[in-house]
Length: 446
Image 1 (spheres, rainbow, N blue to C red):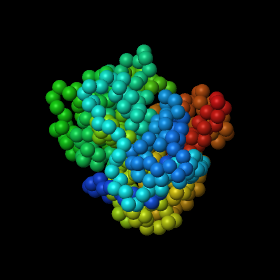
Image 2 (cartoon, rainbow, N blue to C red):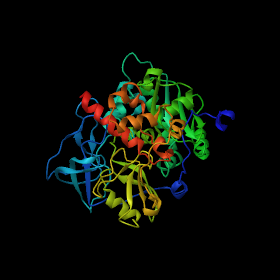
Image 3 (tube, one colour):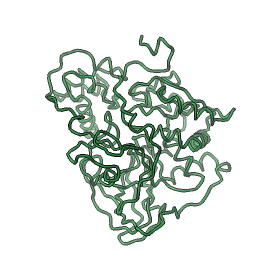
Image 4 (cartoon, rainbow, N blue to C red):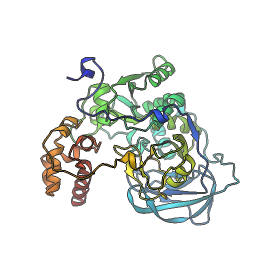
């Protein structure tokens, strides 16, 4: 039993405590970043089918106008983040690596860039189904990084009885503080968005889980919650990956999601604080998601902070505004544990981008990065929050025994948090092995 359990603190077993590096940006308020001269808007900014373009080359659009429609239920529309002219639809670099179709929008420098599309809604008069449709129309996806279409989460399959909404305010990834700043600065929007989500789901209870290193956010949100609203705030242990869906459900509610199952199977839906805060801002105004808050930080950034950035701004533009110290630095979208390296400075900020992290060479580590054989120390087993055997999975991956990994050692229960790689003294990139194995298994299944 660890100290957190002895003190009765809400938590889960295993996990790690990496340095958080949040002090650099935690006290910096959200600031709007200027509009770039061009925006790159991938049609695939969410889990599911890419959106279908509604515009063509040379067409003028205004800020907030729908420019791509959802292609099926698990898909999400896209809106113009700025007033301008469509340059074309071309293959452009993406955070996932391969080039993907994207709408290129030349921004009018002389435009006021006020939102010119959308009509106010009387949210109190909408049915749950109409709220879900409004969320779909907004193009909202999970802003915590997964980018799952929000309207799908707010309409669980029939037969699954959901009784509680869990709001994820943990932000356990090192360096990132955008959710923290939204909890402090957009508190009323967060509470409002939480109410909308509760109405859509038909639940009377919501729990906002926040790590106990953000007690000012706990107090601020608690002060804004009205009596009888059914919304409560719960402080949970500061530990990585506390912000993972299954971990937070265990910490906040004491419930466990079954292996291979979904939170809705145990009566829970989880949403990120940033997602609900943005819904609280957008839905009453009838507007679409066209910008988001990201953390730009790291040893390689001159002016770290939390910025409100138009979706489609490129990493190169963002780092020019924030100040890039060294072009040879490693640039990561998201946090250092689960983020992905940027293949090009032309890679755009998309809906699911929570941060831009710049690690210069000393921060990356100049020591020998050689991979050594597994020494059977068991550190990865003690760290894995899903209680898997990363050591055995790594040995099987080296032998390409992917079927055994999936069938006997529960490969697909791994959500790639990176705890195993972080703790491995042999420097084995276990989580990368698992990603490759899962990708191969998915291709075989398809």
